[in-house]
Length: 412
Image (cartoon, rainbow, N blue to C red; front, top):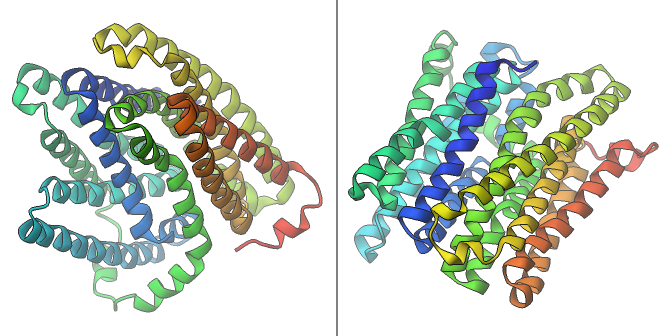
């Protein structure tokens, strides 16, 4: 049984993100919501590009590594990451000074930096079987600041803008990072900080992570590329409507991830080390649980959205509700596909997992580009549903079909 405190925190994160999307759509406008959605996509994509897949190798091995060795790996990886973000911030600052680029981009880079470390921290604590601190940091990054921002912005119109919103987000992510270092203060940081730079370790880890890196890039592209294609084909206002629908549907998917996928990840990793059959048996139970929880949460979230529709007072939002349910169904199927990907990842079947991710993003992009000009928002939802139904079926076949010697031999 999941502790009640963790369940409450995870539900709060979902509810707060849900409320923030509604607030931006209601009290700013759909164009601002579209811009916010594009920025959120950039904050999600940036850490994947910069991390180069290293985090997954580190966090997967964290289950069995001695603390001193784990701390040394984190030191090398985070030093590399910090250097990349410092260079990126310098480029954005220079562009602002020379070309008059919006200073909002510098704020977005700062949020991206803290969110990058926040995601790493959540994975680390989860894989170390410390779900309570993992979820406290997730609550700080995904809910606590929203609980402060929305009342202030409701009372004071000067907060109803994207820079103010991102400043609050930055504050929540920074507090979460501070909490990690407080909880990990007894770790051997002093000894690893005095050690030599781990350039050779970084190069070797990047080399070992290349398959996971390609897989990660494909995964995040398949998750966020649709909003950019919707903006390209349908314009920023309809992109705002799409992001609203997507955010509502994704709130349910996030709760599935936090309550099922992240909780089962360390168990699946340990089951793999126990034996192939034990891992396969646990995967069956894992996928069944993911399925019924996904259906339940999707229905509850969709009905709640219908009850909240009058709050928007924007006819555009209620004109495409069939597209909303298509998007909801598509993201529910995506949750099942993600569960299949986790089963492959924890079994160290990195090559075939990468192949499924690459095919998924290519298939989704092709479907979006074919259907968006013809069906509009309905095409966006249909593309997601068709693509991830096929990917889910493929991954289940890979997991459960016997004598998959070709895929097993492709472990990284």
